Image (cartoon, rainbow, N blue to C red; front, top):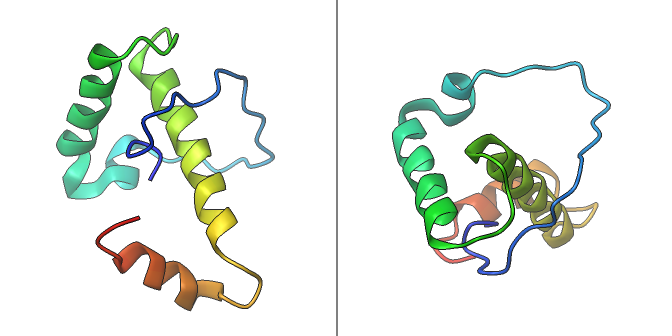
Length: 90
């Protein structure tokens, strides 16, 4: 969702309260190369002020989480998230 938004995500430090770490392979699964290509394309086609692809990824990840959270209400739960993920257009 965040990559589909043409405006640049905010450049900021993201504070998390989680001690969960996840490898790129676990996060991206079999689509890892495609996600990397999308991020590389975004990084080369725009000048959004990010020092590297990892910083760009984190900015889009956190903006995307916010976008998803903003589309769901308390009654949606996992069913609402699945419905949102299955839509062909966001």
